[in-house]
Image 1 (cartoon, helix red, strand yellow):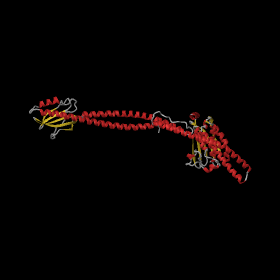
Image 2: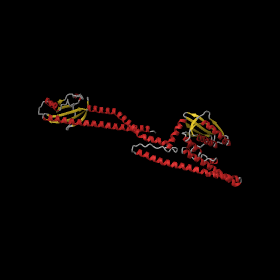
Image 3: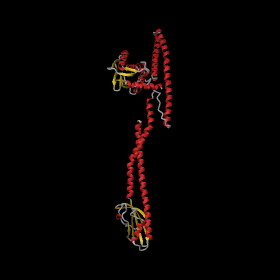
Image 4: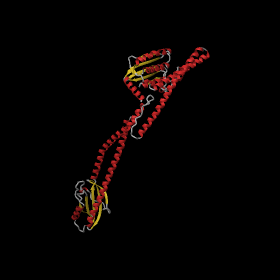
Length: 481
């Protein structure tokens, strides 16, 4: 998963969480506003009801309804304040009823009269009317002219309309806010993950052949900077350790060649003097072990030089088809001794960029490996051809094949599929490891397919000469840092 997809996924989760948060906040805000407006309306109705109670309580006995109505209109102004006011004198005599409100939020004629017993104490309740729901305050007062029922109310339509407008505004703003927040979050996450992505790309390029690459250190002062610095220090220590190992391997291999040559020469002289008998046979056995050890030392020396970048020093355009055909001719004698038939198919020139000496070593090692594990009468084939974006070198055989459990390890150093047979043939398990190191240095990919009892096929895909030259130049520049 790259940093873009990770940033997108994080932004999606962030947008979902933010949407849920905005929805909860909006719902709570709408509910809180509704309760606040209803509480204010109840308080206002109670105050107005007290004012009407005072008017009726102070009215003298026998006062005319018109005087009561004038006092209520003056002090309460129900039409102007969009309030419903109705006064009934016991038993059921209408004393006053306000007109239509200024905002036309309800119809006073649509408010049903109180048919239930009058409440002993003041109360506020919601009532359904033909004009819509209303909040009504009911109270009674004893005046000089008798007992009065005071009904004072207000329509809930304006509160519901305000709440609806608020919810509509939130519904319109929510997608915009979420989109802006998600977009901003995506940019911030992507920017935050860019140093991690650069570190990942650099880490993928680091290998045993290129230990000079270092992770980028972003001067942020945070934990990411400290992590990059610590990893770079670790890479420095790893580079020093690997270089010391390579140097020791190269020095030891080089130093062992001289005494092995001397021992081999002395044994050959002894073999000449003791041409027969038990002593001669034992000297012959020792010579075989010396030869095997000499071969092992030579392979280790080659690997140490490859690890040090020896394969990238002298690169040129090489006709791989011509090189393969010439190498097959040199290997034909070895194949004939084992009764194996060699076939080569290089119909057209194919050019790769690299070290001709090392490329020939790849072909020799692959052919030698195929010949060793192909029984007499078998066929080993070598093919070169142009591919889209590269060149293919293929070596196939009709040998014993490789078991599935051994297939992933055939390029490991000192790994031998058939240990007994490899030892008899003088193999040390370094031939295919050398092939992989040379291919890696040339930017080539090597893969193997095999079926036990049928044969194996090794395929090496080389890049175009221009791409290979660029890779070599980059690797050489990194090695010089």
